[in-house]
Length: 123
Image 1 (cartoon, rainbow, N blue to C red):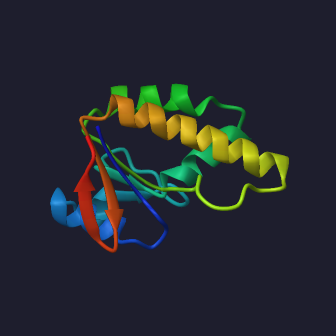
Image 2: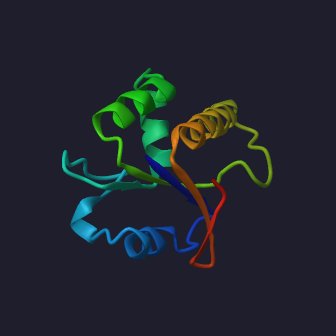
Image 3: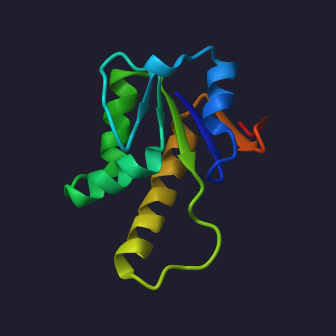
């Protein structure tokens, strides 16, 4: 598994497409479609939110995903920076997302941070 993180609209999708030669049809947007033969999931933070709303444990779901597809590339926005949300549900989402991405980073073979389309390997 590989993890790509960075701020919103920082070129993460383009980076992973170029770095690992992934084409559009091999990428699932977590806020949209789910195909069994994908190589990458972008907007992974939205999948974490959906799992929380369904009463699922995102950490367990991550372990299952990695077991089914150990070569998957996960791409997520960093959402833990900035002002802490007033809404309790948003704070819970932010915390769960952070903890899930920490687990993903531990499990990943490679972790990349992308800023302005430039990837820096941090693991």
